[in-house]
Image (cartoon, rainbow, N blue to C red; front, side, top):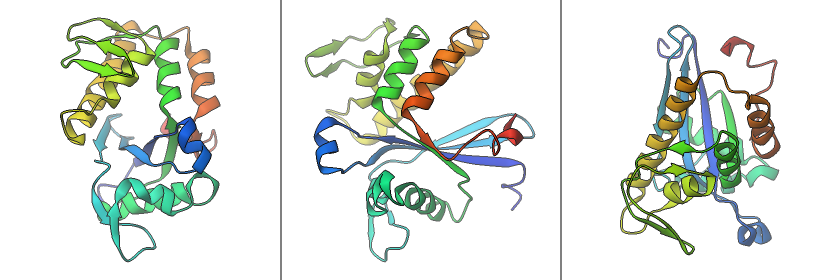
Length: 208
């Protein structure tokens, strides 16, 4: 109970949406990050949940990979987000998951392009769909960020979500360093046009 006081937890769900999977209507939440906002000290904490975590799925007796909870609940058309939230809550011993934000890879690409890219010291060689990203500190556009975050060849899923966390924090730090952005309306448009969430103006007043 002490942990939950003046704290809001939001589950970020990155869907592996693609044209191929749209035909069969099967999406999984391959990126899952629980974001905890401390309203007292204004700190934000994040914990990544490996997609292959073997857990008890909400409303099911059998265990399965946690990224399947969304599909088990019927995906976006039915109760997929509820199943994902309640499965994560159970995984963390009943910690409340207050809201969700679901998005696919296109949102990340669009937002990074709107802010003009991000300076990042790439630590591994990335090869994906004919594109290459070499180690070093280049200015990454949206597609390069997606390729860097998706790369898993030659390693497990854990290094991949480590890369996702590091580049996300770099984007946050860069935005803070640059100060208020004139692109906020464009960022907002990019996010709201693609993401799905139960957050709205009414239930986020306590976050400001």
